[in-house]
Amino acid sequence: MFKVGITRDTQRADGTSIFDPAALDIFRQAGLDAEFLVDDVKEVTAAQAAQYDALCVFNPKVTAATLAGPDRRVKIIARMGVGYDSVDVAACTANGVILTNTPDGVRRPVATTILLLILALSHKLMTKDAITRGGRWTETTKHMGIGLSGKTVGSLGVGNIGGEAFRLLAPLDMRHIAFDPYMKPADAAHLRVTLTDKDTVLRESDFVFINMPLTPETRGMVGERELALMKPTAYLINTSRGPIVQEKAIYAALSERRIAGAALDVFEQEPIAPDNPLLKLDNIIVTPHSICWTDEFFRNNAESAFRSVVAVSREETPTFVVNRDVLKRV
Image (cartoon, rainbow, N blue to C red; front, side):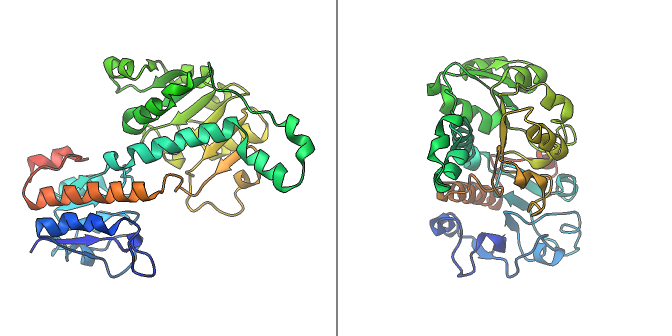
């Protein structure tokens, strides 16, 4: 029997799953035996990897030690999410383990949060909430929002989520620009996005959102120099990975009012420390790396990951393979 393990962090204390339990029908219909791991761990252990042919992983790390056990039988790590910086990709490939992710599961949920944060920032939603709760109605004219028609929205990276965000933003009559060295001009034209260099995106955009994976190349790519290029009226949005933006630099830019504001769902260290100075600023929206967590998000990601597992159980190639070199070995 092909056995599937699902990390315990996808199950609540009362035993219910954070995703629609109907998603498990994918396994039942394929005749696969699936269960939640007994323990909720931060890193999948070699002992756990030895029990399953497939692991569906949400937050726990998968390291070289996970795959080093002599009794390991796991053939696929199905990451429930698009990012895979929590997985040792090289170790997966070296051990002949397929790694998949779920770009189809996160596309719409994350893109809608980008739209949400642009609207919240432009209308100064958090400020207006605060003055209402504080009985400061006389201050309303001091906190005027900005209209979006004719403004420029720019993305660092486009890809799956960025493309969906630009599609959702289309009715707002904004100018769309992006930096993505891997995007084909024809695909950009289809989205009505003008491709340009990174500095131009930062310099000309009224709203900049980041849509890049965390890699050695992108780590710390938005720092003091990049933020200095932005307009004093511009906003930065990061729903990608925290270490892409240098926190000391974004704190300085916000506290000195060199940019208008920011919305961060991700941070260099998570959970963010209670004494992090970013939390004391009044021109930033902060959320706990879960702004896109909806019933749709978890259902989509579970179903996508489970379909990848079923494909491997049938000795078929899953749709979303991260380490495609491994296919030459399996």
